[in-house]
Length: 365
Image 1 (cartoon, one colour):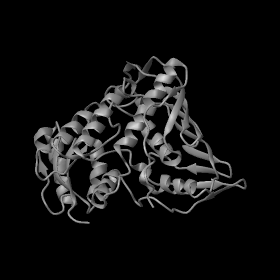
Image 2: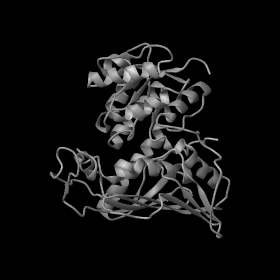
Image 3: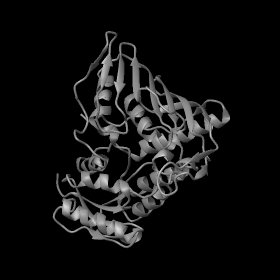
């Protein structure tokens, strides 16, 4: 395939460890540099990358700032693992320096920032990729192949449920989940909506409703256990998504459900129904029901044994092969638009069109 794509990481927080595990096993990319506001974290991640093989036999450098990292000659692409509020800023700095970008979700905090990133990438003829890449694993891709092969007939409807009681029970500092930019939809929606777009195509219209049953929540663990904090966003959101192909998806994202037996995702067609595994994972059982009970489908598509960062590997291979990468910024921008439009529709109490669109990414065969 030629020389590996040389990667500089911005942000050495908790999620970086999961990415490093994947990078350590890839030959298509090479980790060359790391920077973080906390230098000790950057030093630790760089040492792990050097020892684990992500540096392809070379020492991973520790860099003092984003500006210094994006200016390096040994960085071809930036892996942006910063907090969501900094995603667009870091991406624009990297693109301005002539580097490709792959980042954590969301692409940006609003559509204006997302369009700025897309515009900068187009102007510079550079690639931008964005998580989640779980949809490239064997779970979602085996389900997609079943849909594409016509095993369920014509897709008619889908359901997607993410329900829980909230993160404050286990997270010692959960407030950001309940402030603007948080909530169940923006937190977990990218996984479910990316999977639905892969399965059924882009969304053209949304109808929504939402609620905020509790004005305060109580921290349940850590040194601040027992402290209360204000809830500033709606915590139960439901919607109907109209896909361009005609299928309707019902979506429920909630931090207000104590317990449930709801499926993660199901797709219903004219001939059969399909059970799709948790889109927060790369694999899982895919089952089909043609009217005589559920039966498991064999794994037939997707990256096997994938982990966080397989989307970056796909981007590197796409560059070498001259094809579009699958975890694209266009898909991420469309998913962000769907989520923001759904919240607006819930506020207004009416259906709203989704202005953006995207190409349905190529399947992983």
